[in-house]
Length: 228
Length: 265
Ligand SMILES: Nc1ncnc2c1ncn2[C@@H]1O[C@H](COP(=O)(O)OP(=O)(O)OP(=O)(O)O)[C@@H](O)[C@H]1O
Ligand SMILES: [Mg+2]
Figure 1 (tube, rainbow over the protein chains, first blue to last red):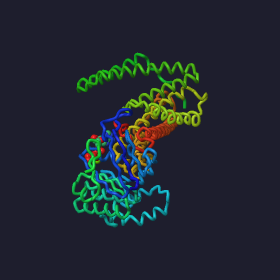
Figure 2 (tube, each protein chain N blue to C red; figure 1 turned 180 degrees about the horizontal axis):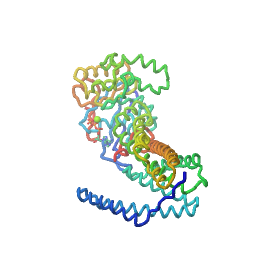
Figure 3 (cartoon, rainbow over the protein chains, first blue to last red; figure 1 turned 45 degrees about the horizontal axis):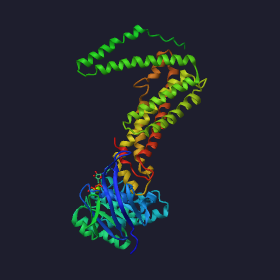
Figure 4 (tube, chains in turn yellow, green; figure 1 turned 30 degrees about the vertical axis):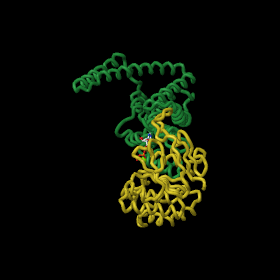
């Protein structure tokens, strides 16, 4: 068996409430191994710590205890900016910058090290990526401000897909989608997962959606992660 | 044009301000503002603090020693630092060095340019120029640093979704906080900008009024006022910028993570 792409070992986490004080534990010695190219589905009640768990995986927070490894390397030793381009997180609340949908999709390439070549390549990808989240190319010129919440959610997912990360962390990606678009999203995730071997960790509270995703199911409860 | 000598104010005349004081107290009593106590305390402090400062300045002007002048500037800086941190309403010891540096550099550079490059006062520490100008500069620098700092904190909290999204896309804290930083520095400058727009039209600035009352030619007074307006805008923007940049070290870790606990009041 190959080495897990992400490995969570004995991770405990408490948010800081002041410089020297910590709040209640959100995670208590949680463990999880994520195999490359799989879909992991995480469920749990509101406030259980699902978003926090995803934030730990792309190093928006650091564990209070334990280690998380990405491709065998302790996250504490990874450059967070590079890590976040490989382990992308799409937040629960979509945020789009002021401007057009096109500008939002190109945003990750703003300071592209690869320069113009990379940007040109990205531009040819925009429509395909939009299609994959159920939006059409005509959307590109629309102002981000005028989109519905569900459209915003899908544009923010498309924006994360633009950089083709190795791992995609999706926090409640269906919260503003109707059943048709939920099904489309589940199919999209399955397709990208099998074609690009992209690893997914999806947080959801919808049982239907969790089942449609056809991945490994976990529950986060009392700070621990258990397979279902 | 000959400057008339300034008319001195006697203790008796100062006492006659009582007429106005009584009227204000009467108004507060009549309208049940419940401000009598606070107002009288304010009056008391105004008398006490200003008379004290008057004596100190008279003494320092008389001695005319550079180290005394520098000592006074240091006391003003320390007091502004303490008051500025107090206004940020958060108890974090790391705020003191940040405020101190933003005042020291923001106000210091402005003081140097105004007194030594523009006015070229002789000797360089001439207390009659240096102390009042430095006082104005330090006071405004403190306003800039606190306005900018407080706004930066609230903008980051308000824009946490934006900041976190940019961090998630692999941008550094500096880029992620760009809009918040811009808003904060602009907010610190707005009062100064507003006063520059109406200066001399809607109101005569206090310093200029004072110079004219003291017998200076209005033509001289406005030149000083022009320098004062420019120096205030410089002090405000330098110190606000420095404060905001330094506060980033409080609000972000070096791993480009937001410190939510530090953003909360
Ligand atoms: N920045 C923060 N500072 C302090 N406590 C926090 C912070 N963010 C979240 N928490 C707390 O941590 C716990 C877990 O929150 P989290 O957002 O991870 O839950 P969740 O499972 O994603 O919930 P939901 O399903 O409602 O999104 C909650 O008790 C929450 O109040
Ligand atoms: Mg959540």
